[in-house]
Image 1 (cartoon, rainbow, N blue to C red):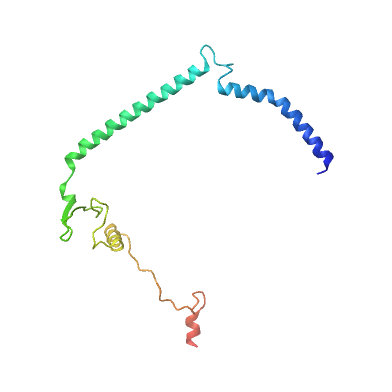
Image 2 (cartoon, rainbow, N blue to C red):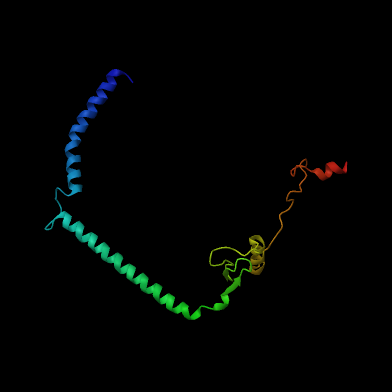
Length: 158
């Protein structure tokens, strides 16, 4: 870009800035609430306050509803909670009581028992659900010099 065209572009930008400055200032003042064109009878800030008050009331109502629902669910589930779902085990060394949840296999501290094997548990779960538990082929036993794409059986037969 030549110096002359750069100079001309800067001049045009300066003219555009001064022309748009009035509009931008008006828009900014309107946004901040200093100018009220379409506010009507009430002030703009009053309307904003009313809207925020309405929002707060709606949020409070929603929260009260949520709490009531949670309370109802809690009352209903109290009747159905079965104590068979928890097993209490006392550690002979430390004399600490561990209350294990039968479903999650965790105690009150969030720890699994010593004998717990997560992988084995997953396999049992998959068998129960009827999903196939398949072993992966060639795990760590594949010969490195055999390319699966090549016809290596024919090569060995020669």
